[in-house]
Length: 88
Image (tube, rainbow, N blue to C red; front, side, top):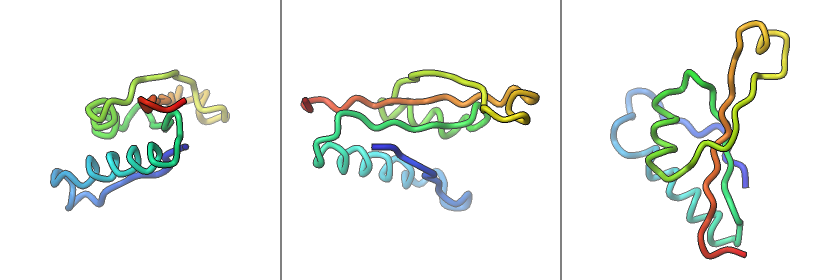
């Protein structure tokens, strides 16, 4: 299961909405027998990265965005992974 584009509007941040969404995604994946949830984030998204780590995601790998701009700007993507316990 891949988590794509989770965001909360700025004026609603700090209310626990993103944490609730993240936990819901993990529960959804667990109920469907997924082994892990994987997501990508840009190096500049510090708040998002902190949230993922608080939820239990672990950094899995880093890579430079495979485009000319990505290489020129050294735009690094971090992949996070959450292994779901109790799945085969």
